[in-house]
Length: 236
Ligand code: F6R
Image (tube, rainbow, N blue to C red; front, side):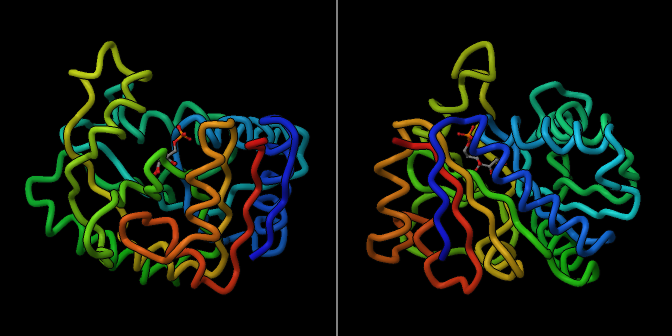
């Protein structure tokens, strides 16, 4: 595991963006596993800037996102599809047909999970998976539990996740109670992992995840078993 400590969110974003950009340059049709939330916004802004300057070409890039709220479709401005469109896809030359987010409005979530896992396989696997970390150690929406779930599945969001994500909604009552998330198998199957974290509030959970016992109570701790993880953090 490689850990890059930076001083600010901007520096973290820049360092992490360089790693994703290197992947895009090395493999122009790479499969990028992408995340939403506050952590990657600066990184996406940097990628957009390099794309506008003609330094980075997304025309053959394929992407697969970690998660989506149940009950929200892409027109809902709180959906993760909407987030990805507005924070990245609408501003770079990516073919939207090559971008994937779980279907939050699927009639049958088990079938949606199976479709999503099959899709990852058909794409040839994820070349680099970008991750944030939740205050409870979740990655994607794999919440603390008694076991790790391998497949893409529906989860009941943890009260701490609902509270943390309430800042994006009018109130905590408006945060969906469930989400579809890529499972730990999909994440751990990625060839490379890039985990970003910023803010003092993430320091303790990040240390637990990276150096504590490997346990489903801290889902991100499983990353200790992945052979190619880079962490870029600004948590001091
Ligand atoms: C988002 C996701 C989540 C976030 C995590 C951290 O797609 O899967 O695991 O990465 O909740 O969120 P922020 O970056 O908002 O602190």
